[in-house]
Amino acid sequence: MGRSSWVAVWVLATTSILVTLTAQAYPPGVGILAKNRSCVSCHPNNGPWADEAHTIIDILDATTKQSLEGADGVFVIEVSRGQTRTVQTVIGRSREDTVKPPQRNAWLYVDTTQLATSSLSKFAPGWEVNLPMSCRVVGDEVSAFEGAHLTSLPMTIRPADAARDAELELQALLTAGESVKNKAAEGLISNYFVRKVRLKVIDP
Image (cartoon, rainbow, N blue to C red; front, side):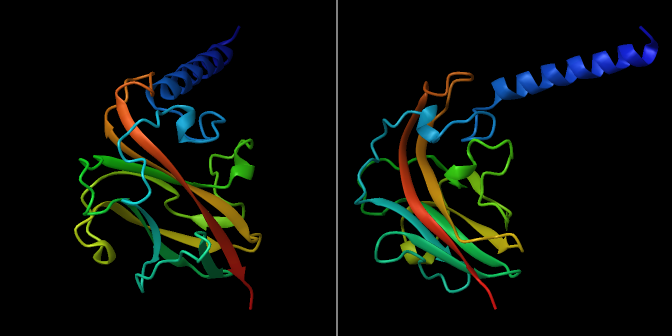
């Protein structure tokens, strides 16, 4: 075997080891490192924040700060084709809650029809997005929810030429504690919530 062949074998072996270590070092994202259907495929749903009464899960227009939630509880994000729109994901617990609040919240927007695909992005096909998932420490301030225990970040989306109307799940996990490495169900206290989100393309 020539020198170039040995180099190729070494690179392939090293790459395989790195991929394996990466998969072990981080919990598998929904449909990304594994074909998990939801957060509770790995994480527990055992926390003290299971009630809906004090749970805040909202999507606001980043400019107007108005909620995009419809009367049926589904969030609708309308965007003109080729244009961008920024929304604000807000997750947490109300100020009236007497339970100790979560320490951090994780969330992701996922098109469940994409879970079985090999694409790293599980967002709706044809839609460009800059922040479809995050895990953030509680402590953000949102004027619409004064005094609440929240996490909040903006997300900008854009329907490209191939984009079509789509339906997403906003999967949210309110958490405290720390997951044990390679044992995601240990050490973490969490509660899982899901909201439906509709993406609508507005054509000229």
